[in-house]
Image (tube, rainbow, N blue to C red; front, side):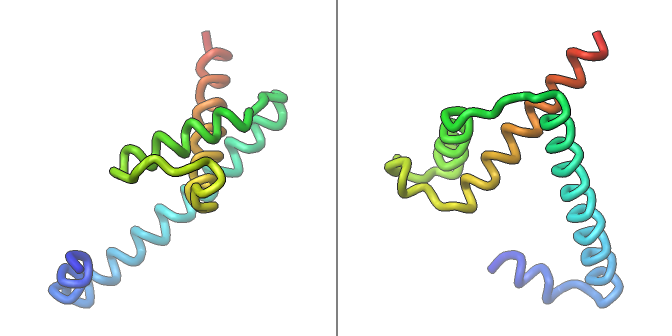
Length: 99
């Protein structure tokens, strides 16, 4: 509702700028995902199920959700958790290589 109200108050120029920024940010996010995936694959970095589950649970807790059984965590939360773990491991790998 807040976004809808903010959107209604925007001029056409502000909406166009917002949409352009959203497209740019989305494209950059996709590039970052594939870059991180390539680094993790090339470096043969493992990602465990436990790491993904722990990250998914932490994300739900941060959003104020109740404790859910692991098998009831929504698929989109798992997808974001995989991305977070992969990005963190790729970042750690790059930082360790530069030392």
